[in-house]
Image (cartoon, rainbow, N blue to C red; front, side, top):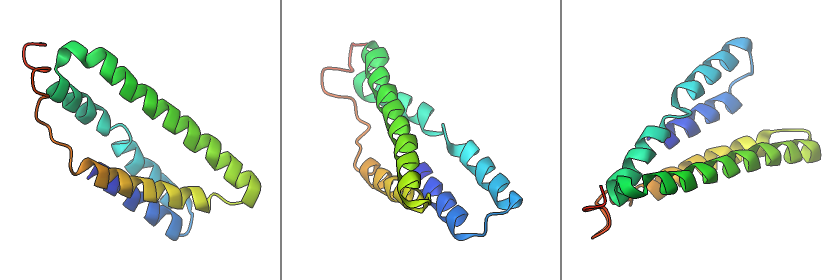
Length: 120
């Protein structure tokens, strides 16, 4: 639901007129949910794989998020340089949020057989 909420917030931001009020509301709402997936993801990793492997697995998760954030910012700059607008990257962020929400639906939060048991 966090990914869907982010997509909705971004959608409203790009379709509403940009004013100081809409920018502050956008910033506040994004600030409330921006790192909202961190405790949920770390809990899911621990529940599925056990805490024995938590450091390494969450390190991989965190690294992938950092690479994704770098790529998004870099790509936003490239798109702006090429088109003079951030519209494409905003729409891309909405699409990625919706795809992320769909990809998370089938996640089974059951421990991996023989891995998480006794690994604590």
